[in-house]
Amino acid sequence: MLKISLIIPVFNRPGEVDELLQSLSFQTDKDFEVVIVEDGSTQSSLQVVESYADRLDIKYFFKANSGPGPSRNFGCEEASGNYLIFLDSDCVIPPDYCSIVKERLAANYAD
Image 1 (cartoon, rainbow, N blue to C red):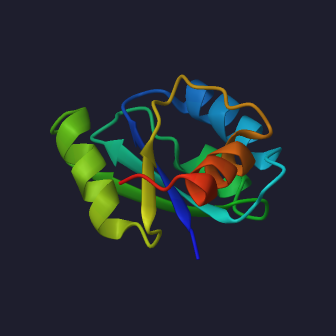
Image 2: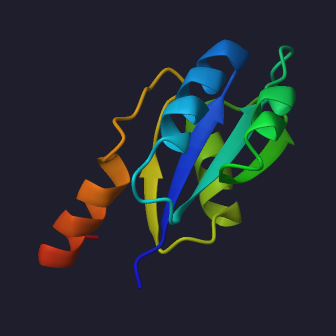
Protein backbone atom coordinates (compact mmCIF):
# COMPACT_ATOMS: atom_id res chain seq x y z
CA MET A 1 0.00 0.00 0.00
CA LEU A 2 1.33 3.40 -0.97
CA LYS A 3 1.65 5.91 1.89
CA ILE A 4 2.85 9.39 0.98
CA SER A 5 4.87 11.53 3.38
CA LEU A 6 5.11 15.21 2.48
CA ILE A 7 8.34 16.60 3.94
CA ILE A 8 8.44 20.37 4.41
CA PRO A 9 11.48 22.23 5.76
CA VAL A 10 10.54 25.64 7.18
CA PHE A 11 12.52 28.73 8.16
CA ASN A 12 10.63 31.76 9.50
CA ARG A 13 7.54 31.30 7.33
CA PRO A 14 4.43 30.72 9.50
CA GLY A 15 2.16 32.57 7.03
CA GLU A 16 3.32 30.43 4.13
CA VAL A 17 2.95 27.27 6.22
CA ASP A 18 -0.65 28.25 6.95
CA GLU A 19 -1.43 28.64 3.23
CA LEU A 20 0.27 25.34 2.41
CA LEU A 21 -1.51 23.40 5.17
CA GLN A 22 -4.82 24.95 4.19
CA SER A 23 -4.32 23.68 0.62
CA LEU A 24 -3.37 20.24 1.93
CA SER A 25 -6.49 20.11 4.09
CA PHE A 26 -8.56 20.24 0.88
CA GLN A 27 -6.96 17.15 -0.70
CA THR A 28 -9.48 14.72 -2.17
CA ASP A 29 -7.27 11.81 -1.03
CA LYS A 30 -6.56 12.29 2.68
CA ASP A 31 -4.26 9.27 3.15
CA PHE A 32 -0.92 11.06 3.54
CA GLU A 33 1.16 12.50 6.32
CA VAL A 34 2.76 15.92 6.61
CA VAL A 35 6.19 16.26 8.26
CA ILE A 36 7.08 19.86 9.13
CA VAL A 37 10.73 20.43 10.07
CA GLU A 38 11.27 23.86 11.60
CA ASP A 39 14.90 24.67 10.83
CA GLY A 40 15.95 26.91 13.72
CA SER A 41 13.31 29.56 13.04
CA THR A 42 12.78 32.54 15.30
CA GLN A 43 9.22 32.84 13.92
CA SER A 44 7.70 29.53 14.93
CA SER A 45 5.07 27.72 12.87
CA LEU A 46 4.02 25.49 15.78
CA GLN A 47 0.76 27.32 16.49
CA VAL A 48 -0.19 27.15 12.80
CA VAL A 49 0.65 23.44 12.65
CA GLU A 50 -1.39 22.74 15.79
CA SER A 51 -4.41 24.46 14.24
CA TYR A 52 -4.45 21.79 11.48
CA ALA A 53 -3.93 18.77 13.76
CA ASP A 54 -7.64 17.88 13.61
CA ARG A 55 -7.65 17.91 9.78
CA LEU A 56 -4.26 16.49 8.80
CA ASP A 57 -1.97 13.66 9.86
CA ILE A 58 0.81 16.05 10.80
CA LYS A 59 4.11 15.85 12.66
CA TYR A 60 6.11 18.87 13.79
CA PHE A 61 9.81 18.95 14.66
CA PHE A 62 12.09 21.81 15.66
CA LYS A 63 15.83 21.50 15.13
CA ALA A 64 18.88 23.74 15.07
CA ASN A 65 19.38 25.63 11.83
CA SER A 66 21.30 23.63 9.25
CA GLY A 67 19.66 24.52 5.94
CA PRO A 68 16.99 22.86 3.80
CA GLY A 69 18.97 19.77 2.74
CA PRO A 70 19.72 18.45 6.22
CA SER A 71 16.19 19.41 7.30
CA ARG A 72 14.73 17.35 4.47
CA ASN A 73 16.94 14.42 5.51
CA PHE A 74 15.76 14.80 9.11
CA GLY A 75 12.16 14.76 7.87
CA CYS A 76 12.85 11.54 5.95
CA GLU A 77 14.09 9.89 9.12
CA GLU A 78 10.90 10.87 10.97
CA ALA A 79 8.47 10.03 8.15
CA SER A 80 6.39 6.86 8.24
CA GLY A 81 5.41 6.81 4.57
CA ASN A 82 6.99 4.63 1.92
CA TYR A 83 6.96 7.39 -0.72
CA LEU A 84 8.52 10.75 0.18
CA ILE A 85 7.72 14.05 -1.51
CA PHE A 86 9.52 17.28 -0.70
CA LEU A 87 7.61 20.57 -0.71
CA ASP A 88 8.73 24.08 0.14
CA SER A 89 6.74 26.22 2.55
CA ASP A 90 5.65 28.61 -0.21
CA CYS A 91 3.80 25.92 -2.18
CA VAL A 92 0.02 25.79 -2.57
CA ILE A 93 -1.13 22.33 -3.64
CA PRO A 94 -4.13 21.65 -5.89
CA PRO A 95 -6.85 19.51 -4.25
CA ASP A 96 -6.27 16.46 -6.43
CA TYR A 97 -2.46 16.40 -6.11
CA CYS A 98 -2.12 13.34 -3.82
CA SER A 99 -4.79 11.49 -5.75
CA ILE A 100 -3.01 12.06 -9.07
CA VAL A 101 0.39 11.10 -7.62
CA LYS A 102 -1.07 7.81 -6.35
CA GLU A 103 -2.81 7.09 -9.65
CA ARG A 104 0.37 7.66 -11.63
CA LEU A 105 2.49 5.60 -9.25
CA ALA A 106 -0.04 2.76 -9.34
CA ALA A 107 0.17 2.75 -13.15
CA ASN A 108 3.95 3.17 -13.37
CA TYR A 109 5.77 3.03 -10.04
CA ALA A 110 9.05 4.92 -9.78
CA ASP A 111 11.63 5.19 -7.02
